[in-house]
Length: 77
Image (cartoon, rainbow, N blue to C red; front, side, top):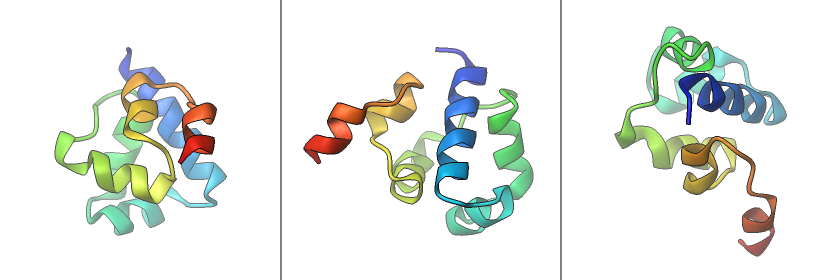
């Protein structure tokens, strides 16, 4: 898994939710610069934020950690 893959997935899911980087950052109580770093592949999200990120972006932790969509897992939930 590369940081750019994780960042690209976060950007895709954020856009699917109709959120700006700033709106996502506000919901996670972090800066929009942090979101930008994730999406550009310069950093990974802090592990303590994974559950919150998944709730906001409506994805599973498996999807986020593997940097790939798990449509079957979403349907099962």
